[in-house]
Structure formats: structure tokens, C-alpha cells
Image (cartoon, rainbow over the protein chains, first blue to last red):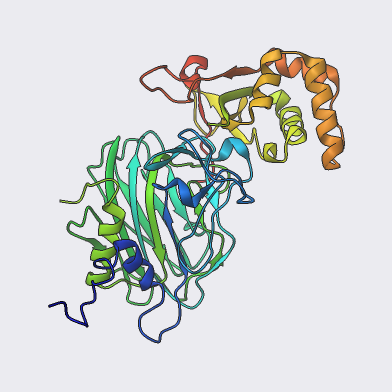
Length: 264
Length: 131
């Protein structure tokens, strides 16, 4: 006899997407968390134009604005037609020349912590290329960046965290082209910056990042300003203003993995 | 797919005209031709010799470029500028020079299975600035 309290009686367990989304609510009774959640594998959440009026319909369409699935509405946009990543399911493909998106300013000033999980395909190791930039880690405080790769021939992905002092860790041995799930966490006051690939061992740094919280800044996906553009594809992207627990990370990494199936 | 893929490379001397004409042709043309290129066999942080824009563009824009007709490009860009309230700072002669010295192709900028890529064909690399 079916239990009246069977939580799955309305169609099975919650999807990974809904579980990953629920984390933004911050748990029972808690306030919401800043960040964004992008699914580039589904055309139904992607618009060809920055004004978000026309949905992507076919491979090769430019993505002018993917939808932030989180409650924050931090939809990234790209107004210039030729600078829009092209859709090639399950990826948004960045050409390494001028393709990028930028959000409106995201107010991370209430936290000094962030977790970023990305399903990506890195296509080139020929030069410094930036996947995420909340600001220049060389010159601005309260920032983070992920460089993929860090420099020509480095075959790595480097995760930078900065309060008033910049620190980074590097996941190496990632010779392009390579597809993987990358996870980065930072906590300025701990201090901690760590990153892992495909749910493996963390590479960590506990060196001081100085002081302060993160900033209220634009988040650029691919490049910083008009240069250092990422070359490759992103499939699912999750940025949240907290250190996710192991249980939460398992959910988000599994969600990121669904279209690419690279987790062991 | 409703858009056309093109890689467009203009010489640095015509960068300002290219930017102005592209912006006039469409609101989605604002911000084109801002990525600098330098010779592949030289330092990556040198002054740009060319500018590039590559990606999906309106098919009407692609058709206009295929005409290789300076007067048609000038007329369309002037009409677009008027529609957007932009000043016209270029001439039909500028359009002719732009078309004569630009490289427009359906190639990807980088090598793939089908092509060596527009950058390799022209001996150029992306300018690296601001690391």
C-alpha cells in the first residue's frame, strides 16, 4: 500500500536541477543567496538577443542572453551580434576572439565566500584566457577570476581569489581539448581557496587573502573587458555566494555533469 | 538557423570606419571590431595591425558584404544611422577602401577539421593585453 507520506508519489524524486535551485533559497527560513545558474544545454532558456525576445532555435544561433535559472535574475547578456557565443548543444561555444557575456552588477558585498561549478570544454592552451571575472584580481579588491588556461602552454585551469591579496590554486594536466567539471571555492576570511576537477581531490591554499568581502560588480563570463577571451564551450554554470557543503556540492556537480557525463 | 556566420578582419587604419559602419547597420553591430590582431611571428602585445569580428550576423548584413558594393554599403549604413540617430562620419570612399582591404570569410578564426582558420591564413594572432 502506498504511504501517504511517500515524497515521490507525485512523480519521483526531485530533479537535480530543482535541488540545485533550492540551495539558492539558503535553506529553511534563510534569506536567498546571490549568484546565477545557467543551463546552456537547453535552447528553451536561451535567447538570441540581449533584449531576450527570441529564443534560440537551432545550432549555430548566437546566444545573446542565457537565462539565469536562479531566483536572482542575473541574466548575462551580449549586445554585439558577433560577440555572442554560438549554440551547439549541449554547449555555448566561445570563439576565443570576442565572445563573452556580462551580467549587471551582482551584489556579493554581503559575503566573502563563493562556490563556482562549471561543466566546460577547454579548447585551447595557446594564451591566457579567462572564463569568469568579477574584477581584475591584479588590481581590484573583493574579486575572483578563473583562468583557463593561465598562460600559453600551461594546460591548466587557475582559480583566483582576492580580498585585498590575490591567491590562486591550479588544476594541471588538462591538455586541450578536454571536457571536465571544475569546482572552485573561496572564503576570504578563512582563508581558503580550493579547486577540483571531476569531483577529485582538492588543490587548496590557506594563504591569507587579506580582508573584506566580495564586491558589487559585473560578472563577465569569458574574458576581462575586451580581451583574454575563453576558447571552448560551457554547458552548465553555477555561481553562488557561499561555500557549499559536501552534500550540496554533490548535487550541483551531478547537475553540471548530466549533459556531459564526465564524472567517474 | 536564422543567422549567418562570418569572420571579418579589417586593417587597423580602417578600424574606426568599420566600427561606425557596423554600428549604423544594426544596433547589434555596436561593439564590433574592437579585438586587435598582430602579426603571428611577432610579440602578442604589439600595437594592432588589424581588428577582427567573428560570429553570427544578420543574413542581410552578410548579403550586403557579399555584394562588395561600396555605394550599397554606404547607402545602407547611412539609412541605419538615420534610424538610430547616429552621426554619419564616413564617406562612400571610406566604404570602398574598407571593402577593398577587408577579409570576409565563412572560416572560423582558429583551425578546425575544415580549415586552417582565418588567422593562420593571414599570419595573424589575437593581441594579448591587460593580463
